[in-house]
Amino acid sequence: MQKITMETPLVEMDGDEMTRILWLFIKNELLKPFVELYTKYYDLGLKKRDETGDQITIDAVNAIKKYGVAVKCATITPNTARVTEYALHQIWKSPNGTIRALLDGTVFRVPIVVKGIDPCVKNWKKPITIARHAYGDVYRNVEMEIPTPGDVKLVYIPENGSGKQEILVHHYEGSGIVQSQHNLDNSIKSFAKSCFEYALDTKQDLWFSTKDTISKKYDHRFKDIFENLYIQDYKEKFKKAGITYFYTLIDDAVARIMKAEGGFILACKNYDGDVMSDMISSAFGSLAMMTSVLMSPHGYYEYEAAHGTVQRHYYKHLKGEETSTNSMATIFAWTGALRKRGELDKNQKLQNFADKLEKASISTIESGKMTKDLVSITTLKNPTLLNSRDFILAIREKLESLLG
Image (spheres, rainbow, N blue to C red):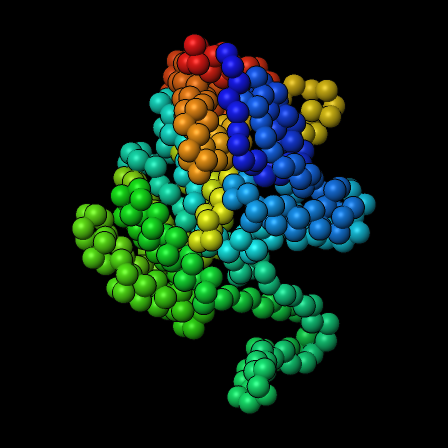
């Protein structure tokens, strides 16, 4: 068949470890044979980020702002052990955190639902979407070790010099630690708007939760901004669409989710969304069965897998041992980006290809061919366990039949 062409490039961000291996498999077997891939490539692997002083991440973000759509491989967020392993110059910040902060977006994560992989929570009948605020909180925190007794204060100094505020955080009688977090009204408003718009687009109820009973200023600000925007701009639109919005405490939301059937959006602050998306993806089958897209109010889209770099499998791969790594979320990152690129460029062939690749991927699993993580939980009888590469090749076979 004649390859599908692209008019405008995608921003392609490569990553680390086993997902980097899968990235190449997917491109070579599922994309390049059928699409004339047109990408602006950025290597966000940890070594390259270290070599460039993390400038490569900034460059990638600027490219996203230029071209509008990006696809990203999973990357390492280093800790002290990684500094030693990779001989890093410093402990670099999360590239995801940097990208999300600079694009000012909201992350929407939805599990990939297939027949034969039943949710752990038996009453979950429909996917549960996690909307994660992508700025601030612990991901932009500053921290300090406290070596000896003394006071830690929170101080605000206005630029005009008047109205200084000072609060005692804690009087330390010995050693300890302290952490400061922040957020911005404009970012919270963008988050709220994205959630309301996504709910309208998908015709789903929207839940929002924080812990404002404890955090009476920080979390309460989130609650107030959501409520004010809803009443001002979305209450009538939601009523017309036949969907609802309500606020509840995060612990109540978790309790409600366990008894719900799904089919709604749960909007969460940054950390809550990080944790809840992993719980939802695992409960629906596997961490590799969760799609993720960062949507910016400025019109930027960044697609990625919701999981990490699969370090354990990578070490096995380096030893020459066979791995059975689930590539579904990474495949869906590519299909999401290609579909959005097609939508923006009015390229129907590219959109159709993305749809068929997703259909082929789901059909492969539903036919009983799957990776080890799914074999252990499927209700299908006599599933076929495939290694990392053979799973992708099985999807290619299905894809070729769909493409005719």
